[in-house]
Picture: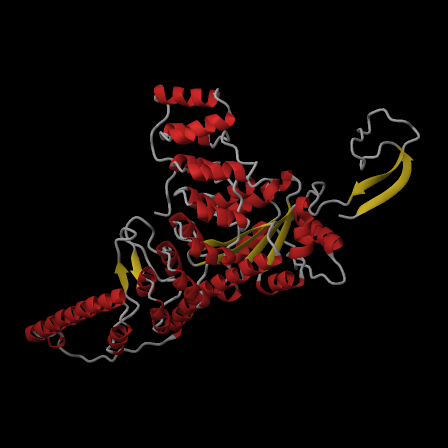
Length: 532
């Protein structure tokens, strides 16, 4: 931020360490250069929101423009108008949105990342870009209110509770026929390569959704414009109805057809299970449909496509033939029956491979364009699933495709997922790759809360010693600490270790025992394991 020099006058030097405030007594011989700060983009003094947007764009350009810099082309309109237009425009006019929330705490992100040639050029060419300044928390309602109304209340609350330490923030959003979808949630700690990776994947997901909408639109337009003519003959209605013999033949033909399809389906599933490519190809050549959906016991009543079944068994040689037959590499056509909504996306083939620990399958799917940031109905990515199941090799592959800022719908990172099952090697690998050990979810639970609940002493020791910010007495929204969970779940080895590290007398321990004895602690599963 440029600093403006003014007239020299007597007074304290605020730039010196230990200097006093302007009202404190100082020697009159002390002189400093008084500094004033250039107004932050979107200054609070402006009343009209349109003026504030224009002021933001003007100040951003003034602050970060340079001979070798590209600037994002921010829209000079209110966020509510931007979101309304994106929601109501026709599919042929749609573009994904990029919403940038500036904060002076990390100006390097604005200068070196957002204004880098590749990021700014990609944003301007593929997104509708809108910006706002959240350095002053007074203006946060101008962002959260339209997002709550046009995107989702949960995203609005997430931005509102983010705090200065998680800003700046770059969101990418698109509107599909199913509603708004948050494509990426990029923190100001991300590098240029991380941002470019998230933006390109977001654009790919948007393009896939848009192609489906355009196809439906074209089909609808064809039906409206086509002229249909039905030849009419004045015949007795009785002669138009099939006879009893014809009805019997038709019923027999349909029954035979169903039997053939069922037999073919059983053969196909057996061939999928054994990885028999020749049989699969033969069934396909005979008219068998490889796009069938199979109900499995792995997720209750959820149906899987054949590519997901191949991923489950690790049959990498079946990927390309199935893709050639028209299957989607992300299994986007999968539907769920039962508890979840019909069009909610279930586990993708990449997620299933991650859960099963098939590293080569993961590598092949990624090379074929699988989306590593795709989320299931609980918001978990493939990396969440791999971390939860403790597959170190899979985590090592997926971590380079996933930002450390990624969370599920409950705000949990892959570190949280690994702690729920005590997978220390996974936790160490993620920590070395930039994932924070002290991150909290939406219920203010840390990784230490979850490892204390699970009962893994080695993980508790590692978290406690690896990061000074990890606190065994940090309270979640239920006002329970990791120490409380260790006592409550009966993990006395962790309880004794905490006592040894913190001292033999502990009010926290006495308080927890009091809760247990007085039955004020309800013994329920506090961590709903959404990746089971």
